[in-house]
Length: 141
Image 1 (tube, rainbow, N blue to C red):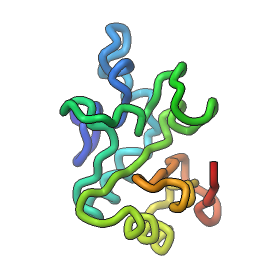
Image 2 (cartoon, one colour; image 1 turned 60 degrees about the horizontal axis):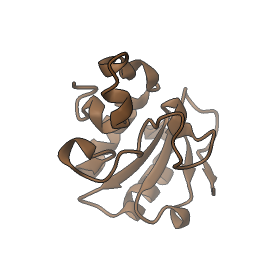
Image 3 (cartoon, one colour; image 1 turned 180 degrees about the vertical axis):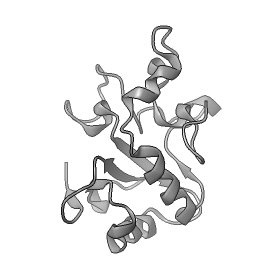
Image 4 (cartoon, helix red, strand yellow; image 1 turned 90 degrees about the vertical axis):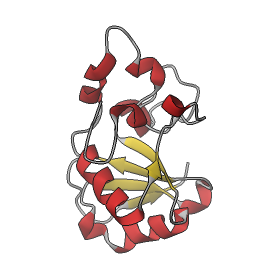
């Protein structure tokens, strides 16, 4: 199911949520409403960005919305609330995407927090919320 111009809903959620008979495509309601616009802008800049790839027999299934009982990440991680996403660009480096976001914060008003790049060797972690007040906060787990 298409979520935004460049992303399928499956890319944004754990398969146990997407495939749950009581949830299915309704899981789009569990993702922050500013996600599609923000991720589409990032993909237009960076080219292909992988979040989850479980639907293609890939190994990523916890890079978007996670299950409540997931053992991945912190108990109150933004991933559990539908606003944390681990971006893995394929045509540019993680560092280039990370610094592009930091140096162009006005283009991404809904990214409120990012993990420091030194703590995320294989991805760029962004948290998408309502329009932020001030600079993007950089945190380390």
